[in-house]
Length: 232
Length: 293
Ligand SMILES: Nc1ncnc2c1ncn2[C@@H]1O[C@H](COP(=O)(O)OP(=O)(O)OP(=O)(O)O)[C@@H](O)[C@H]1O
Ligand SMILES: [Mg+2]
Image (cartoon, rainbow over all chains, first blue to last red; front, side):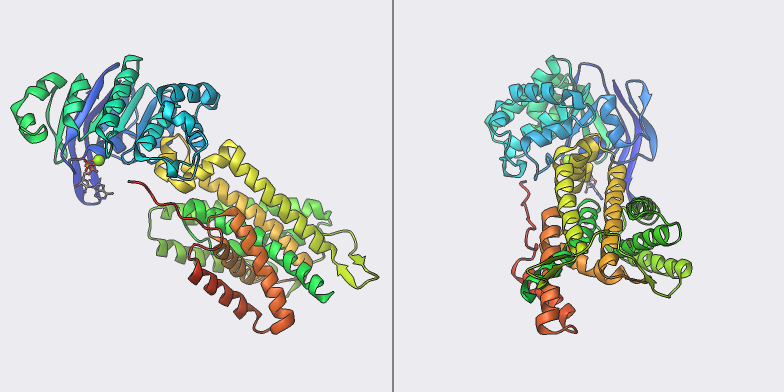
């Protein structure tokens, strides 16, 4: 479904991503974990076209998208929930969701109903300005907004950031549900333990290159990972 | 009666400022830049309307439409050629470029139309209204200007609140990356904003010159600066703010001219601006939403 081959990304002179290759197959949950500053967000932003890689290629469903504008990828089935949510703070919940369906205006009604079913908390806050939502509600809105475009593959950048344990569990349950209903998922997480639990496969990123990869199970049991990311 | 008649001229002048201020505020809201050349687009619009009427003998309404089309194209070209390459540059570089574009337009106008003032004939076809046995005269231009301003205000508000493109514009003005991730073409959206702002500038130019008929290549600069002030006064980025700021500014200007001093009126206008910004740095209707992390 998504294939990243040997991409190299620079911020000015700084070589941030070095020869990153990864693959997400149809129906999988793939986790990308790593310490702060490892390059996880940079990887996602490059895939979704907000950043450009100098070399290498990115393929989405057999189409080379290395040079495709970010806004064109939505209708090709890619959705990206960015780190820090980035909901439209001055718009209402409803308007945020409408923006999510910008490329498929016909899906506004059905899409919103579907999102409200998944996130009942949003339903009661339909007309609330997004800037006044709690952090958890904003995360739900960001995810709901991404779902409005009916993505085939959903990229999530630290969906659990700043949330209470109960809410983190809820978000992970929803990710699992989404996957079971057919959405392929690329998940970036600091919470390696939970991410590895739901991931079919995972990659570990360290200082801009892929250090390890394997099934979620393998990595969860690896000594190296336990020491570095799972607290022993 | 002079009070009421001053108030009406103030509202009418203020309506012109408001229409211009909308262009500043929309462009600022979306591209986060001050398009200092906006005032000169007004002047170009006025010249195009003038030529259409005086040389081609076209009816005023056709002249206005031609001026709007010309300014729309001009706005899109300015954005594409001068500002788009600087999308990631420092705001100082963009500001200096905008000033450069402003001088370019003024000098191009000087080259094309010369420095001799043109006498603009009003586009308004009916007579002034005389009330209370002629004690209160409301000019036809004032009436048309205020009505145009109200229609534009309502139209723009509906456009940004209800239409898909309008909502896309609000999304881009809040968060470009997020808008791009929604599938919104940010560059096209910015072009559309320049197009709308410039079309409004053409209307403002025609209305301004209908009320104050001397047209020279620098006709747009002072109203441009005042309208920019109005946009800041009302809260830059806010559409109702531009409207309120424009109208208040027009009233303050006319009142200072008639009750205090003609020479000092501009100074008073800017003094009020400074005062408002000291008390409320975001302008009258400007709001600031703190980001949750
Ligand atoms: N706009 C930028 N300009 C320059 N350097 C940047 C920029 N954005 C990120 N970096 C640098 O690139 C490296 C990778 O950053 P990135 O945000 O991808 O890390 P991350 O793995 O997502 O970290 P975190 O878990 O903290 O979100 C960091 O060293 C960061 O400082
Ligand atoms: Mg990150």
